[in-house]
Image (cartoon, rainbow, N blue to C red; front, side, top):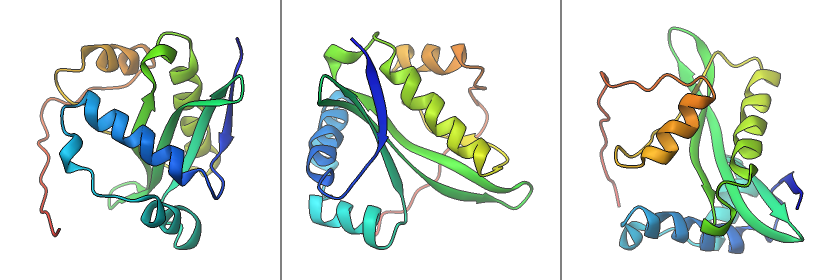
Length: 149
């Protein structure tokens, strides 16, 4: 079965929230999700602070990637891949590679200097997925974060 990648359109925020909750459940952190379809839709289509692409197979959405422009004071504009997720039954089908490759392609089209993302340390299959695509996995830098809500 063939997988197609398409840009998110208004109305997709509902399936995206379901998939985001699937990702959070996979990462054992479902209670941390407080985003809503309305907020996500506004962020994607009104303020455009992030973008999304979806993977579809046989008319069903099986995964997504959400990304946005970040900035390196040393390099200039960069891409940040916030999330890449596939429903469990779609893993190993090549759909994840197609999603990732499309985000990389978008970053290159925009002439960004690099692309960054995080991987939870116990997700060894994701680590291997990215390493196979030439990614450097940084074990030196730590993440800092402040929560405001």
